Image 1 (spheres, helix red, strand yellow):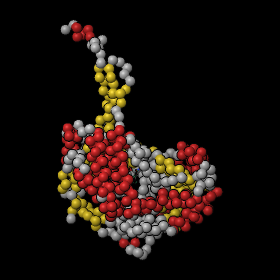
Image 2: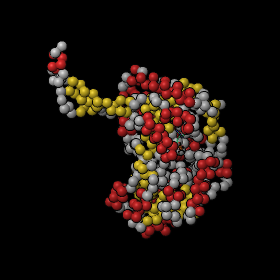
Image 3: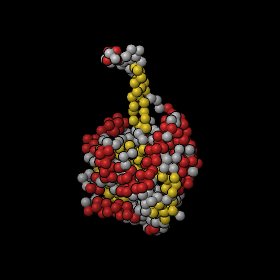
Image 4: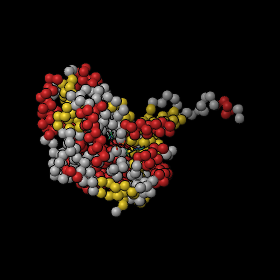
Length: 493
Ligand code: NAD
């Protein structure tokens, strides 16, 4: 059966090509989606622009919009297992991870509902015979473009605050993973969102995504994806003088100091790089271990890596599932080959796992490369797979210099018992997030985003709603007499 898409309130087949969603564990077809064509994009945006101006939405009070978000959160929670399974079929992440992502998406929706009900506008101190206020208005129609690695979380992270802010939203999910976004469309429909305010337009980035970004009625694009694509979108946005939020790639350093709690550090480093099979923007993909602990730590880490359970994403106990596609596994394999050519030593992994039906999916063994300096390409470029590059450092200054020597600046992790050093180094690392004695923890109440080529703008936090609004200043005149300068002009007539 061919899946319909959501074009501003209408469920119907898109006018673009039909695209299958494939299960990365065995290549079977989950569904075929009739993707959007450029005509669908234009229609969705024009109707969204009309819908957001309708009194039913324009005059809806914040607590009423919040009620819709609250119902959407409840609906998602009510069908959490089904959505987690759908997400697992679409991108191959183990069920344990997709269950957590769905719970997080429902929490995100609930959080923005609550934040919306409690946000105040401001009365500013007047400097004349007037009352001044600063209020927040929606931007209009907002585009949301997402990658394939955590669709349910990335999509809700954009849809919820954008609707909370009073906008209409047009979502372009990743080519490979359209199914969860379509389910979110159904959920917001059932939650009572007025028609037209949300469109789900799967399709190719260069066609559907490009048409959304360029459309004159689109007033902001929130993009999560690769740095190359983000840079292209930023150029188009600059021409339109349109704000963009860019959540891009990373090559995040995780740092183990001599005094670290080894059990915690081994566990955290493994989780940081090998959960989601390394397909995470925040993957801790560059490891720096201090000289004094280096050999003991690496021995423990390599042993623990070899014990990770690579397996079917729907099986209990699987820690590492397949990569998104055969093609992507090829990219990861090429990087490992490159690392070896650059002089790396392979400490573990470096091949496809065999047996237990794993030959049918795009699996890759968790891999650690060592013996390179930060100058090697595999230490500089985002691999987006289960590949860790391990390096060493002498002291704090050496570490900071190496860790910051990257075009990326998304996240970092520190393992040490010395809290003063931890805070000192945390302030010196050029990354949007720093985890100390933990890794890959994400809270919707805490802003998230990158520095350098990892992006601009922040999502999450109460400011997450403000990112989809613009400020307006209102002056309310209280003067009993005409403004002095104009007064005599009026008297002459
Ligand atoms: P991608 O940049 O190839 O695609 C992301 C989205 O952009 C997809 O929906 C794609 O169809 C669309 N797109 C592609 N070309 C486009 C164009 N010309 N115009 C408009 N849209 C276009 O990235 P990907 O391969 O899907 O995802 C992996 C990347 O995403 C990695 O680099 C990863 O680090 C990054 N990522 C970042 C974060 C973050 O929060 N910083 C989170 C997850 C993933």
